[in-house]
Length: 228
Image (cartoon, rainbow, N blue to C red; front, side, top):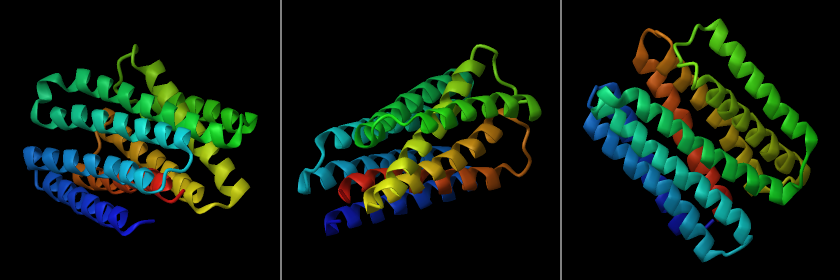
């Protein structure tokens, strides 16, 4: 990976750490700004990485759209912190944008590996687990949003399984990095779901866990392009 991408990744990490620190201190606006900059950072890693080493244009496009929609989702969820009145609508919209991002990533992985039925079955299992989790943890989710959340979680598992097929099937560094990123995404969104929809105590811990897994996930997915 080029030194420029390494510098961009380092700067992204700095802003991500800033976001975590500001959120822990209850400084919503400062945390939101760091969140936006960190999101812009991981997009830059993918774009610059491809420009310096233009390999597999389709994979780059899919990953770029994936992190770009993640950026839009970040914007919506960031606004939620300073405009809590619109929390429910912003969470729903943010979820849809992130879902679109996961679908693009899945397309990128499937294009490289071909369709693999077990990976899809893992995704279906993830959707079922999400429905069970909503029931067990008594999550306060609007009934209209529950199917969306199930599809969302299913896409997370399908995304991770598709990346795993490539990582273990090819042994290539970019796909191993991408797989680690998808696994971290599952951790991040599980924390986020508990944080948003259950009355968790000591929210700062959950916020830290969510952001500390989310940003490495996005950075690693972007780096998978730069490492191709």
